[in-house]
Image 1 (spheres, rainbow, N blue to C red):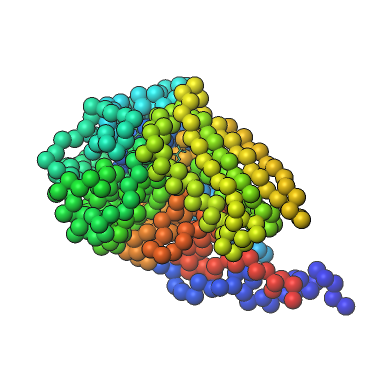
Image 2: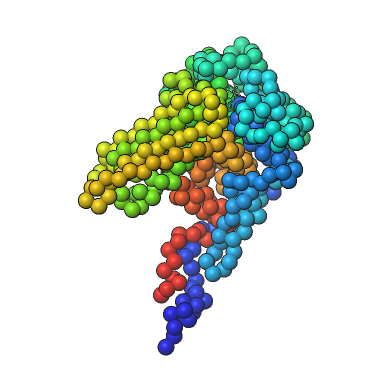
Length: 464
Ligand SMILES: NC(=O)c1ccc[n+]([C@@H]2O[C@H](COP(=O)([O-])OP(=O)(O)OC[C@H]3O[C@@H](n4cnc5c(N)ncnc54)[C@H](O)[C@@H]3O)[C@@H](O)[C@H]2O)c1
């Protein structure tokens, strides 16, 4: 009689699918190779942007490692578990290399990247000194800025123009100038600017035509971040939004992105407390543990914290943070467990902490027969250290998307939801917030593009 292990081995030998059912059923997509330099344009040269650029240079010089970056350190399993095929993601899909990246940015302050990084106080001076000559060369272009959209800050390095369309033209000129002077063959823009005040979608956002009319008429529903986005997409440059502002999450930008084959994604980098929430909440739901309350409070003392001290900017952030639990816990499907959850998020500006935020969560859960329990999380995190690898991955993946026949014309790149607090989706579709589903979506997209079978984790065929 065959032993259990012999049976398993025989089954594996005969298995035609493995736990890789749901064949992608297609040939691989055409992906143009990443030849030449990739230019990175960053509106907002603050803590996140400088930690990212300094980090890339430190890694290039062999001074540090790109920890937290899926594109640099992540692997992807291909085929059956028995095949032993798990290449690095960057070897599986053709991504730009770190040596190919060149940078520019805009800011309302005149500090170059070295001064801005020193001011942000995220990275230690010892590291910054080693890359000082490189960072000093990245100087800010004049920003498109209006104090009414970010109330807590003001600065001198700001463009003047006769209307918002004129300002958009000036940004387009900056983009062309950078492409020429840097010799980049491709570009990507990523918004690392401050969180703007809360804006509801309005008529001017509904089509490119309405938006362009609004630009010439200085419509107040057009925020500065939208002007950068409009300029980038009009130049055929993909755009990622790291803040919770609407920016590219309006029909006009979806339309422009598809027409110019410049992919878009957003909103709001998923770091810190929300990252923890999207790790913990799927676990509670998986085990059908009820949640009656989730109280989250943060103290942070960087410029981002100061900006978020303004009620308008905080409202934009609050909306982004609050949506997460509802989508993960699905109270409409599990009313006994999640219908009455009390969810509160606070952010308090507390200068002594600088960028080293502290996020507390008090979670009231209940189990078998309704017995209550509590969980306390105290996350002493470094916001920009968590955000920098996200910035890197988004740039490399958006560039990949633009070189990929199947992705470049679809507009929103939902497969990049993994990186965002409020992932953008096609209209009418609810966003996927569960970090592990998001990761599966991202990896299956890459498998699909390369004509590899999708992984469902079914696995029954190993045992029949
Ligand atoms: N650090 C994180 O973990 C994290 C997570 C999610 C989202 N974010 C968002 O990323 C953004 C950047 O965060 P940060 O910590 O680097 O903030 P920061 O305040 O250090 O940097 C933002 C920079 O943007 C500049 N700026 C503001 N408006 C501008 C404009 N119109 N044009 C050009 N520059 C402009 C500011 O002068 C500032 O230097 C914020 O919106 C923040 O909410 C950060």
